[in-house]
Image (cartoon, rainbow, N blue to C red; front, side, top):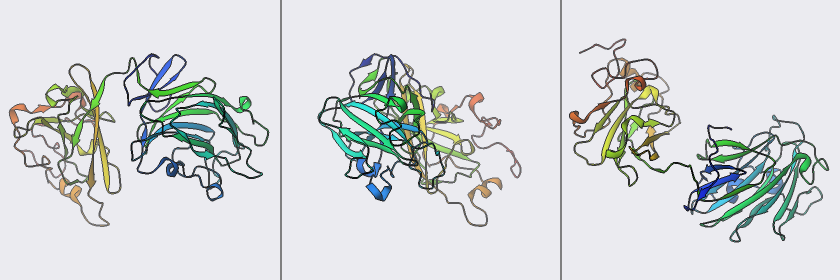
Length: 383
């Protein structure tokens, strides 16, 4: 298993607009990767211009690895994307000679192969696409530093796709034109820029469809907002994050002890906003939160309700750029500037809660210093 993702029980419910992959007795919830371009543009196959390879998914590709994932386009349509191996323009990766794969494929009637890598007229095109039979059969074989694959869709509101795979010696074109082997078959899920990766068996059929794994916990959405117009990620102060009520996660039902970032950082302080119903303000030490990016950064939160309903949400904030020279706001913090609470709302101190001491600070400092601000240090005086 890769990316911290694990299979669960095999039986599946009938809830729509959630997606799972089943293989044998295993079931894996999968989240479509989302983008602001069409599925064809995402794959970006332009024959000789891209050396008959996928130029749009190079950041997702890995040497000697076949990947597949669901993709949601800006119109909300879903597509299945398959990419074998890695398009290596600088020829710095594996030199084991490409590879071969055969997929016997059945998909919904609403879709079609909108990208066929490779299907063109030419003496060097050895791939075979038998699309007029059921199941369809695609025999791929590719050269060094290139890819094969395709995109199928749109899949519709409710769908089922089955793939019976054959890699390497089991593939129809193995060792007929190119050598090389695929050593891993991965399913991608989640964030387009950093998806979870789960390795699956290379010699067992899979079924991808709408539904839910039976043991998959109930989930919902958190409404996360950052009140500051922009923040300085180099600050030694606090980052304020507001959590608003949603249908699945009213703030009064959220178990404060379960609130954490995607990387496991917990707030050092929690306040209910007395002037706004259904809002709590969370405070994280800026030094503990990973706000990376050139102009913006995203913070992702997780939490559970008292009955165990898991929720996730995220918010994006503009970052104060690092100056080319001189002191920035982080220097002001070291000189004694105290980070404010991220807004001018009236907080009810009676409802203030401290984060659990053992989670207050991952750097070993005591998160509850009695002031809600950073601990004393060089250049800082106590009250």
